[in-house]
Length: 64
Image (cartoon, rainbow, N blue to C red):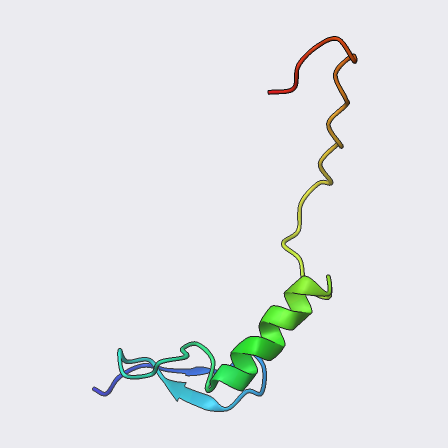
């Protein structure tokens, strides 16, 4: 049985899952950077509840 194969999350090209596959699960640095850019742009997110913004302490109380 050979090494497992996965699909690149960006372009769907098949990637062999071995240590020599530098960008796994992506097929290339380009696909990895496209995915990272989507996270930074807010196009991708992990589902969950929004976190409340922390309230500012009173002016005479130091911040932690």
